[in-house]
Length: 237
Image (cartoon, rainbow, N blue to C red; front, side, top):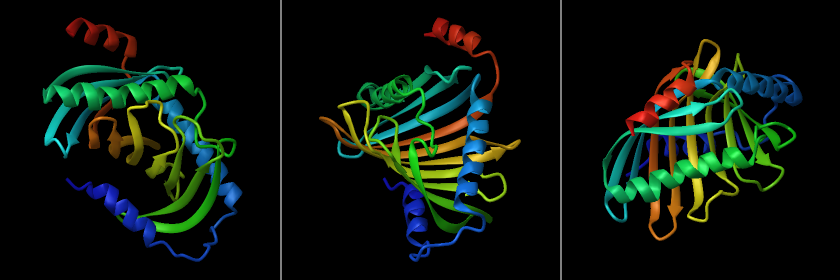
């Protein structure tokens, strides 16, 4: 199964002008605007809940599964997941989806500050692209240290708000010995001035299983009481 967004993002990257591009505003100012916008995004998402579907496939074994869940982000940025329903192969649930979610939660716990900032990353302006009729800035980022949760790749930023509309990259280090070579494409939609996650497509290798493919669709974002949601879903399980 081909990941169309993943391939498309890589093709878009290759179409950028090879020669060094000159940013319309000083690069430091552009990065500063992005960092400020990114912090606003994180603050806006904290204390909220994302309803999502995770589709996972193991092509080699011809197995698949789909998890419906809630992703809660506390006011301090802590991530927890609550399963609402699953369909498909149980091996996909335990060995693929559960490991992926556990790895994200672990990375969140081990690194309280893995934000894409000049303290953590080097930035390089690459040019201007067009996504769905919208002009975006493209920045290449390289982590200064090889740490869990850090990635190497490209950021597509809305030209006006400097909010992320797409991120493409590969993690330089994964928190689990069972996951390796993880590559991803994250897509966002700007709603009320904030970039809200819309879709993630990822490819990785899982130990003892082989290559896997994940598609995560975010269905709804709300600012309801996450503690109440957690208690309700715990009672349902």
